Length: 623
Image (tube, rainbow, N blue to C red; front, side, top):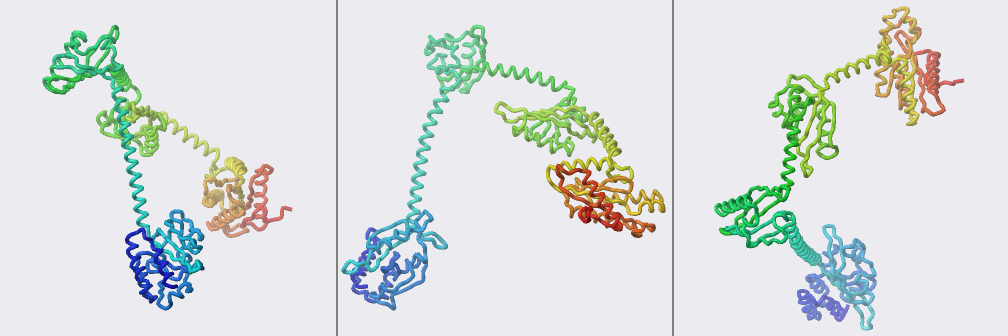
């Protein structure tokens, strides 16, 4: 590289930035004194800008210290090469070391659009949307590139000058954000002022009062008339300048003058109510006199007829409610939302065995049976949440004596005009006798059910219950298309056992065998039944053949492990059983009878093969 080329490269430094051009001018003036490449490198490393020189094929031949720091590549110098041969020395291109992205997009910058590429095509250019990503941070760059040409205008390479503009961009974004926030705040405040003006006017328009400005002599000075009180001032009358006694009936005027004098004397607001007849209609009014000086006051008159009517209706309603509440034969209470008992009637005291004062010191939770409280509280919460208007439930209460009382509880929620919940109204009807009768009936039904469905000797299901359950599970598994397994087993040589040990020992033996079978099949849907005499059946829903066989073996081995002595058996010296197992997925073309026949055939084969064994239906040739 000759001095003219180097000078051309130096002129590529941006001149529009004073702190950069101040460095550039001395360098231009010192070109003739920088023949030593190491001095050139040292000078360039002192610049606060990234400097890169590229040869025509796009390879970088020099990067100063700032450039190397920015893109993170190893140091290099010109100490061993001359400027004339620098362009022929190829280093790695920075693009391969540090990919360049288009700022803010996440996309790689198109190679042909990079300032370096454009400069190598002979174009001087500037770009301020470059982004490189270091491990610790993202850096935004501004780059300017100019081609380096020989005397004939042929491009030999290019020089790129770039600087970190991250802080500048952050400052610009911050300024934009601040400007946006300021504009938004101005807009909001302008809108707020506009809305406030509208609201103020709306409030003035909505005031239901008739407002007078009155002197201490009882003379009307001005007034604001609304549509709410048109009767006090006839349409053709202007009260300004008139005395109170001229506009109002005598008694009404005298009372108003009395309160005017009190307001001026005390300089305090005076409030009173008055009744005025307009033809055959009586109107209730609230009058408020506000002194605002020694000689003037504002008089505000409001029609409160509707409020008075509502208050009277409420008083009558409360009287009716109190009479119904106090004298009801059903226990009633008013409870706070947290459960505190606020009021009770005599019937409630009788139901719970407490005095009124005692109950008012308690919560309804304190007198509720613990097992019923959760359901009660859950429904109370649904009332408060608006999910239901009322609820009814049977609930147990604990009397003061500790006795349990059953009641039919009905609860509703009282809300205010804004639909905010106020308190709970509860009614409790004593149903203890009915519940005791129901419990007796349930016990009787259970006993009857046991007599009908339970085998009296073994206390497991009998044949009737076995048939019902098998049909029920068959239909269910037909719908679900799941396996149903069935086990039939009986005691080996049981007649010999009874003949030699007696029927009492035989009964004891069957009871013990039933217990073993129950422990082996104890899922909720499993059923062990006494099928008849010494024969048992086991229903195993959702169980395939392998599972059925495993349960059968568990029963067989468990019974053998009991070690019940049977010296007269031709099978073993202890009581043993033979078991037949079958399993299938019910279909519309199969029958329960066929399933039973398969299990019975498997049991028959177990006996035929020597007893004390489990045989599954598919283990033998049915021919």
